[in-house]
Length: 268
Image (tube, rainbow, N blue to C red; front, side):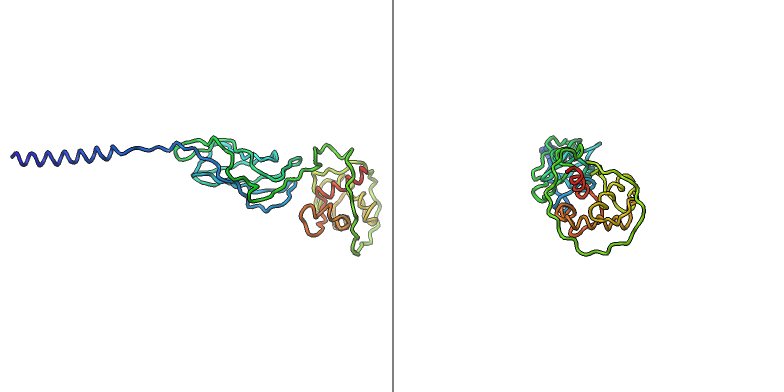
């Protein structure tokens, strides 16, 4: 009897001991807040102007979840918002706005609630490796130094390039009178076939007619002849127009660099 009791007691005692040992293991808790490991982009290095879009990819030190609005603030003054759900990366698209500049583009900070699986909140959003380590993305603003108009702006130093022989359409039609003045063209616009800014197109046509396309009709409608005239102007000043926009050939589209150059002529 004594032997049986002892055996039972020993068995029970051993089971209790195992249970106590199992629950006596040290309990560890994660108290380390997530950080920003790196900022990268799938967008190629180059110069970008208002209206262009740029990918921003954020990599965190661990899987995180965002709550509410989380904003990636850029040194250009622009921003974009990211979302993440138990992920180590999050991406957003930054659209360049007029007046924004950066050389090179980097991330200044990330604002909003970012937490890991243990609910540790990110407090340090300074990237260990910023965007400029892998890409050289330059943001060029309209009307550098604050675009409040072109008055007082020094004309650009220009060296005309000979224009190749082109087929000039035989067009004769009465023009709509249009007076050219300094700062006539809004440099934030992009004028092309289908554009609806009638007055701006008429101003552009008046300038082109007086310089490179005497056959062009001033109608306020951007058609194929206006495209040809813009092409001729861009061919005459390639370094000040399409090459600044990283293009290899004239586009026939009157964007920021082309409009800025024309305004420079009008203000000279």
